[in-house]
Image 1 (tube, rainbow, N blue to C red):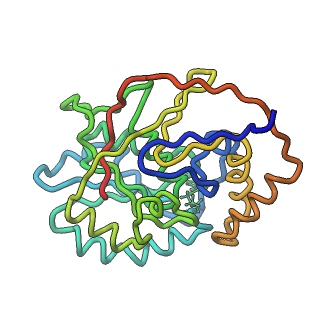
Image 2 (image 1 turned 90 degrees about the vertical axis):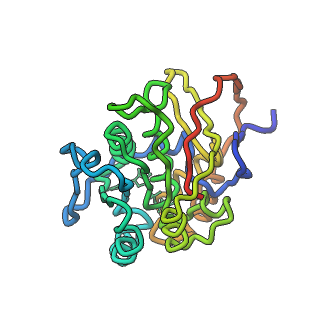
Image 3 (image 1 turned 120 degrees about the vertical axis):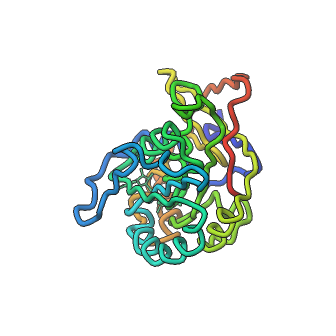
Length: 266
Ligand SMILES: Nc1ncnc2c1ncn2[C@@H]1O[C@H](COP(=O)(O)OP(=O)(O)OP(=O)(O)O)[C@@H](O)[C@H]1O
């Protein structure tokens, strides 16, 4: 049997070998130690801060300090004064730094429960993927604990990662200033969310692309070469090809009903 490589793509994005929102790659990633020298703002986790001043939008920025081999952190520091001046008048800005893989998912869930108006991923596709997964819990959208409403929290992105395939897919310039402008204007639109249910019933939500097997392996290996910038995906793809064997897969497409569509600043 020839092919063993499948991609499932929902929304407006074409499948891309370069995207790293792969289920396989993510499952295989090992946690890394948090950077010792970075402040970790746990404002949200202390509670209370988000509901303190209604009338202003509460924006939670989930920053991956290790994104793009540490470049995300440097760029974010440079961007912050502009972001504060552009958004600070109308919005409460909360920064939350991730301490390792999957932390962005926890921060997002907590932010939504506390009533954040938007959770904005700052980093690459991996960080965005984790934030998207924070919008759901046990197969359902996470809700605001006070109002029990879902879908009121918007998803946002300031693309500061290595590949930033998602932003490119949407035709964005990959310019963080553009992203801030979208947030300032409060431009929202709906986006489909795909879900993959594994054998253990664990759900992985995704936006632009989900990769299986060869393409997922390429994403996994690419993460070892992030210090080379975008070239990491070339190295990752080459390494994935070496010794690659096609395999048969059985994939079931099920109608799981319409998931609550997250809203995206676009
Ligand atoms: N503090 C941290 N230390 C180490 N790894 C982290 C930390 N926080 C998040 N991560 C992991 O880093 C991974 C990659 O981050 P991210 O996607 O932001 O950057 P990137 O890989 O450079 O960009 P792209 O995915 O667009 O190529 C995430 O999937 C996440 O699991």
